Length: 316
Image 1: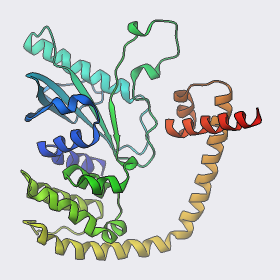
Image 2: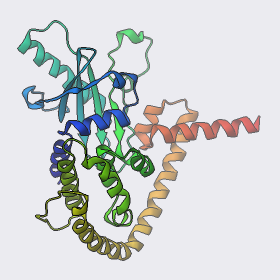
Image 3: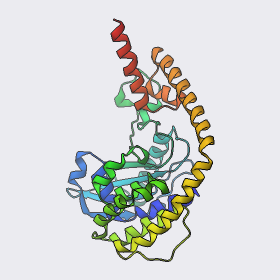
């Protein structure tokens, strides 16, 4: 099943306009403003083999900035658990990629890289984003320690209102990934309003067709041969979604008690992890180490640190 999700993401991000939307909308770095998106072209990641233990890049793009090519690596992650060693695996692939370029092209210098991780799992992403965060603290100067950082985009952290505001291809993709059939059915007009902005772009109708295919895949709606030629063609999809939403609502009622019990257990585990995190903070442990042992996100740990500090300040 995970392979189906992966294959669809590879297809949708094979459209340059989707990658452009991704960079412009979610990578808030100055260099993005200097990119020549007309030069954006997809490379074949399979041309550059990597070791089995590496984290293979799913897509590689080349784009120019002031005449200087840059590599954009896209990695898709669908695991139900967070890979703590992601920066190591991604860095290993990147260096193998450059080593392959060196052997094939006899280069002395390389085009700079920018690695993006797109995470589409349920747990919050708490793994380090820098390789240096995997290392114990040391007196060795930082300039002698290897460094690598990837840019994380966790779909489950993006507010729906931001996706509606963006109104582009990537916001439509993330919108359906963040909603179940009931939510999508209730907010169908929101999704259609986003797609209206997509249809007039290059490849817009094809992208909408892919998004509809994803709706059918995600919500397990029986396959339809209907082709999407315009926004008006989405009416039949809506009727199928309504039927599926009713089935999900019925299933939700049947499982309500089970979910309630599970939620209670989950809250208990979360509370225990927060108490454990407080003890580790008092023992001066790093955020990364606390995240590793508790499963809490860096943001959650920061909030706990702030609450401890406020309590301490009041007592003084």
